[in-house]
Length: 114
Image: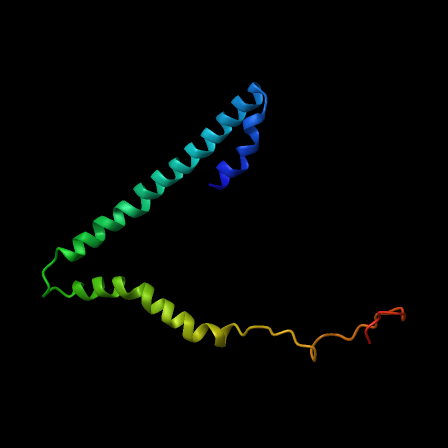
């Protein structure tokens, strides 16, 4: 949608500019589609085959534990990040006590707050 939104103003462009922008827009969409198809072929499809192969094994096989570990990994990592993250990366709190003192000359007059 961002790509479409940035090209809305070009609808009133002259014909040669509009043709160039349509070609550029199509090239961007083709590049996105190409990267998507490559990532599917290289990452997603082999991972799907591997996981389906793990699920198809008998339950007595020790690999079923690996399946459960892979399935639970995102939730476990989220809990670990929530618990350990604040200790490893403490938030910096800017307070008036830690801020440097800066002298700012103000003109006094009517309506000045001190």
